[in-house]
View 1: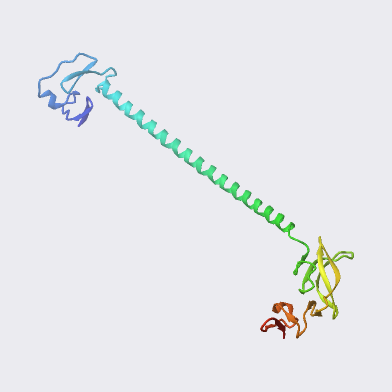
View 2: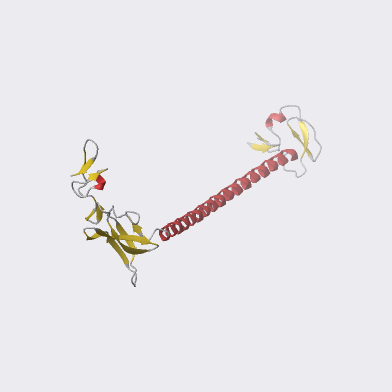
Length: 210
């Protein structure tokens, strides 16, 4: 079997003509034309293949080459895009961490440095004040209100960042008990908080401290 005129056929006598065509009516084609499927076609290079068939094969090869290049270009582009995405993600994470750290530091600096639990000069409430000491080197102190006498209380309060003290007198009906001015047992009261005992028993018209 041989390739003659772009097809495989039997050429037992080696004369470049398919045996099946020798048995049929031969078509006479003048050189450089050859007989192909009962018609004459150009064979300029004498290789017994119609030139238009060779042109078709070259076209197919060219198309295949273009497709191969397109595939390669697409692969490279995809790889570059993935690498760029990874780099951007890493940069964003670093920026987020820095911002969070800065915010935390700023908030800590603005926290109050002096605090009085009873809110100031409140002799009826035993309070605790925390802040800087007035005397150098101004160390941090925590002080609790206490009784100086049975009629006066040492009241601690905040003034800016510093803890100050004031001696305050209880009113005529009160006595100083456990760092606050309060009503002794048997005194008329309006609420349990008024009494040194913490108990105000309601009577018919008024209350009495027990």
